[in-house]
Amino acid sequence: MHLCVNGKKKEFPQPLNVEQLLKHLELKPKRVVVELNRDILTADKHADIQLQDGDILELIQFVGGG
Amino acid sequence: MDKLIIAGRSFYSRLLVGTGKFASNQAMVAAMEHSGSEIVTVALRRVDIDNPADSLLSHIDRKRYLLLPNTSGARDAEEAVRLARLARAAGCEPWIKLEVTPDPYYLLPDPIETLKAAKILVKEGFTVLPYMPADPVLAKHLEEVGVATLMPLGAPIGSNRGVRMRDLIAIIIEQATLPVVVDAGLGAPSHAAEAMEMGADAVLVNTALADTPDPAGMASAFRKGVEAGRQAYLAGLGPQRQKAEASSPLTGFLRNN
Image 1 (cartoon, chains in turn red, yellow):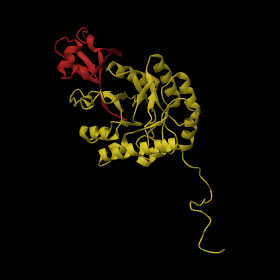
Image 2 (cartoon, rainbow over the protein chains, first blue to last red):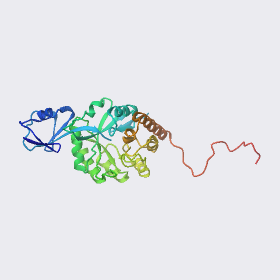
Image 3 (cartoon, each protein chain N blue to C red):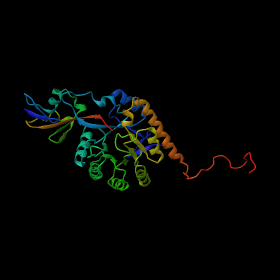
Image 4 (tube, one colour):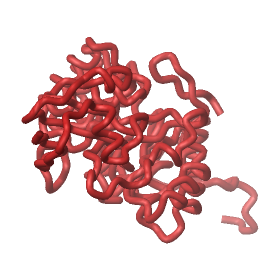
């Protein structure tokens, strides 16, 4: 399965849901906001949403800023 | 000190600080503590998925500081609205520092896109604090759409040049029915004091604290500058004159003519 994550093409051997993707990338769900094909996902939906080939994801976090 | 009230919420500190560009998280936390600030700004960016960094939020005590996410990086209203929604989804209170800066050289705020985004975000229930050109007419338009503060720039972001927009900011302060926060370009405690003496309700600084060898020391100095300026404003500055006016009596000189 191919996904586009933060502008980078990534290949995954098995199907994944959002929760599994974050785990795979070693990201804490509480620290990251997920946007899937331009829709924002709340953390409680991560386990319910199965990712599809070609999905575009943005994983966003807070950084220092003025 | 008298309280700063933004959108019905009161704050003792009139100094807002940014969290960008510090050499370390330790330096950032020390600066936040010494500033006395209760509102700190943060930005939203993509996670580097190949090299995830330590989370900024693990260093910020959310009970002590109100997190104010900004929409920095947005080049138009649509991008700003998208960032604001992401910030809210991240579990922040719906407060947003609206920044729309299409020009990469001076990072000046786009008045038209800022107003457009403010309108949408207010409708969606955000408390909107817009970074804006020092334009009194735009200030009126922003007030009409229901923003929570007016945040005119003192000088371009990160320039440390002080209250260069002084005369226009004075008009904004004179006409405002909302708190005026002078944001961007303040480089020295004297600049912060100047803005506060003019009657600004608060100031926001980041680079001035982050880009110095001693951020905690500078934060403490800014805190004093803001407090001094506010106190002077409340006390009322004396009138300016073209000519001298003697402070000592003009009688009883030790001479006869």
